[in-house]
Image (cartoon, rainbow, N blue to C red; front, side, top):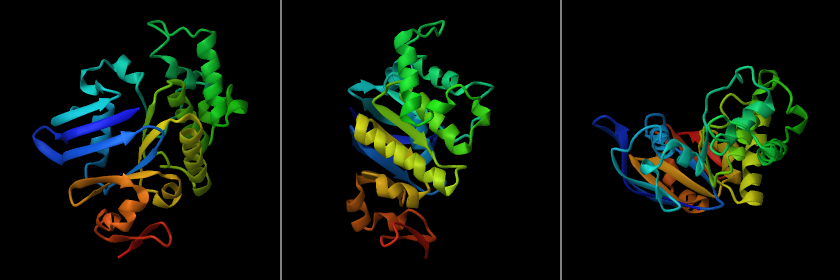
Length: 250
């Protein structure tokens, strides 16, 4: 799996938020996207997943131009976990996760034996087998986020994109979700791209960083960007302290 972004400019209407983005994302890596609010971080993610159009440039995944794919075709290549807290809409965990089979289950959404096996396997992978028949609304915030990740796993895509996956979670749940994502990368070869503010919980498990600083996207191995001082330019009022793997007030 390889995501390639060439000469990309993202924004709204005629307003350019982030320009001249050129980056590659290889398979089986966990990549953190860091950036201050308003830097273009969320806009870049939305452009990658296809919820808004690029102003210029091309995004390809495994050689396919994402802008030319239908929603169903794109859903077989990348899955998405957004930051919004989900109430579950009255669904059980297994019903929520089964939505991830939609790209494969046809117009009527009927699951066959293989689909049901994949749903059960995805629920097991996030440690929620004992909650499969429980209402999503009855879960803790951390369990709900795991259920959403299980839904993404059920899509069986080579790339999972997450927007602030630890929002609304307590410290313990944040570490659990980060450890889960790292395990999926290590054991399944899944590629994970996530925007994040919670550097303390996520940096230890990340392989690579995308950091927006001074209106530019820097990308590379985690340690390379840290040693180059790139992270010091992410936030105006904070500097990166490598001794604690997190930011401190300037």
